[in-house]
Length: 455
Image (cartoon, rainbow, N blue to C red; front, top):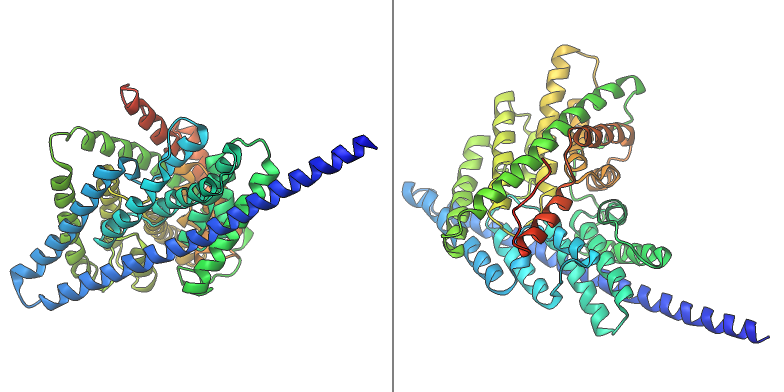
C-alpha cells in the first residue's frame, strides 16, 4: 500500500511539473508571437517611410541618392552603437549564441539581449540590410522564454527546455511555419534533455501559440503568396536531384565566403563601430535607391530580406542577365551585411538566393529539354530550401519551411529530392553546418584561439 501511495505522489508531482512547464511555454509562445509581429510591422513601417522620403526628393539629382544613403547609414550606425554598447552577443543572427547557451558553453543575458536585439534589429533591417527576421526572432524567442522561466523560478533543466522552445517559436513566428520551428530544434539545435517527452511537448506548445498569435495579427495566408503548384510527374524528379547537387555546391561556397567575410571584417579593428555601421548602411541605402532602376520595378531586389527579390523573379520574368546580376549581388551583399556584424538572420536571404539560382537552372533545363520539364517556377519553389539544407545541414527543416512559407504542399517530393541532394553534396565536399562553425569560432574568440572554420 505504501508503494502505491509513493507512486501516486510521484505521479502527482510529475504531472504538476509537466503542466507548469507547458504553461510557461504557452506564455512564452504568446509573447514571442507579439514581439515578432511588432518587429515585422516596425521594419515594414521604416522601409515605407524611407521609400516615401526617397520619392519626395526624386526631382533633385544629388539629394535623390544622398538622402537614402544618409538615412540608412544613420540607422545602421545607431544599431551598431546600441549593439556594441549593451549586448555584443546580439551581433549577427544570434542562433549560435542560443546553441551555446543550451550546450552550456556560453552565458545568455536574456534581459539585455531582448531589447537590444529588438530595437537594433528594427534599425538594421529597416535600413534595408540584406538580413532576415528569423535570426532576431529566434534569439529574442529564447530570451523571452528564459525571462519567463526565470520569473517563474523554474529549475535549470526546465529553463533549458524553455530556451529551446523559445527558439523554435521564434523561427515559427518569423515564417508562419510551426512544423519547421519544431523540426529546427530537433534537427539543427539538437539539445540534450533529461526528459525528451517534456521538451518536445514544450516546443510544440510554444510553436503553436506563437503561430496562433502571428496569424491573429497577420492573417492565415502564407507569408509568401505565390502560385500553388500541382504534383510533379515522378519521371521528372531526377532534374530536382541535379538541382540539389548544384545548390549543394553553392551552399559549400556560401559557407566558405561567409567565414572569409567574417575574417575580413574582423581585421578592421581600428575602425570605430559607429563609423563602420554608417559606411555599411550608406552603401545599402544607395543600393536600395538603385535597385528599382536596375530591376525595372518597385520591388527591392538587391536589398532587404529577400521577399522582394522572390516576388520580382516570379512576377516580372526578368531576363537571364538580370537574374544572374541579382543572384551575384545578393550573394555578395549577404556576405557584406552578415560579415559586418549587423543584426539579422541568413535564412531569408538564402531563400531568395536559391530561388534566383533555381530559376536560372530551370531555364537551362528548358533550353536542353524543351517542353519536357515542369514549369520553371516549380524549380524555384523546390530549390528555395536547398541552400538552407546545404549550409545549415537541416534538410527536413528546409523542406518544411519552404512548404509552410509558400503554402505549396504538393511539391513535397521535388523539395525532398532537392534538399536531400543539396545536403549530401555539401557533406561530401567536407563542409560543416554553418551554425556549428560559427559557435566554435565564437568560443575560440573568447578563449583567444585562432579562428577556425570548415576547411
